[in-house]
Length: 500
Image 1: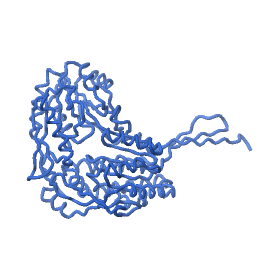
Image 2 (image 1 turned 180 degrees about the horizontal axis):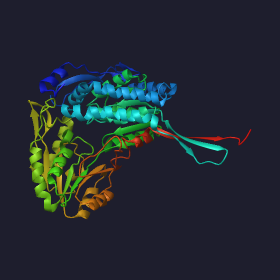
Image 3 (image 1 turned 90 degrees about the vertical axis):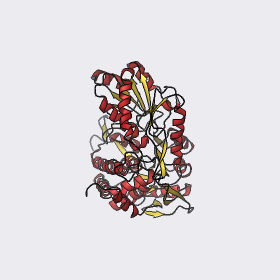
Image 4 (image 1 turned 90 degrees about the horizontal axis):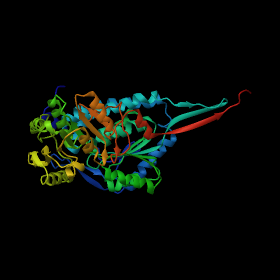
């Protein structure tokens, strides 16, 4: 069918049924306590569903189900080709339910349904397909050994993986964790963010339809302080993979130390710099991508290029172009394909964003935006906001906003730019705009981040690892390197007689 209208999306949304219970051992069950919490649409303030509030007892049930499935071998000891077939079928089912997933993402956390339909959902399907196809192409090793000895080195699944994912890309982040963990033969207990549990619950249901045995993928929605903490402390979880804030990531490191020393893989916050040098001739593309890098998904992106570092001689020219583009990006109904910006995930996050704006107003020049607005009289919406001449030591320049607020910082020369760019506790990503090949390599080498995008922003693919340094964490999602998180190296040394 052709592109859908606002009325089409609203009609489909009205017909949705929401999975709201905990998913354990292949079926939906209520929380042990019977408690629920409200799932609120941030664009309308309406309660979408009442979600089962998982707590420690529910996490324990899910972990026991995952452990049983792992030990029986119904998935962990299945042939790679059989695991591949299930993951490929799951990818197909995600695509077959494209519009449902797009609506779940939009209703849950306020993102534009158009973006969910064209970026998020196809991306999640592609990740399950990519790791499904990789399952039977990962080879083990034979180490050098003396004659009469054979040293085999194999990657083996760790067991039960706990995955805690954020609300900004609910389905994609679930896919980034679950696809490689499942492909490697593990069982998974997934804790979605309390703001956005709907797509994870539907994903688990479709995974069983695709042929994943019960207990291999369990989903426990709940609050971070209860369900998330219980998963981090559980003594029978072998590995915990987390994407979210640096503050919460530190909690999970502590939970590991307090429990069973489980592996913890963190992908945390960022304050990614976007460096534009005066030798860049095409400022129009730089302005286009600078706007995309901070305003896509309402700026709720860990690798958002939230610091725009511009060489002083071209700063005013680039800023003028950027403001023109940002004026065309204004909050609207997320279900309207004509809208250019969606809602902020909830009231709490909107308040955090507005506090940054208020602080920055005292030390920098407001070039655009700065207001919280409503759409159709409701919702959590913040205008695209640009501050110019932001002091590098200010809160806006140093702390993660996780919202559509850009800090423009001028620099004088290459050394100055690199100094400012690296002067942060984070090290997730950066962008560099230059027409000099030498400068591109030179600056990329000196930026202490996990990914440097040259003449673009936030470049990523299934083929390349995503993650950072410093307090952005040390885990790597995507690529074959993701298997390193979910497998352990096991040596089997065989000494045999040279002759009988």
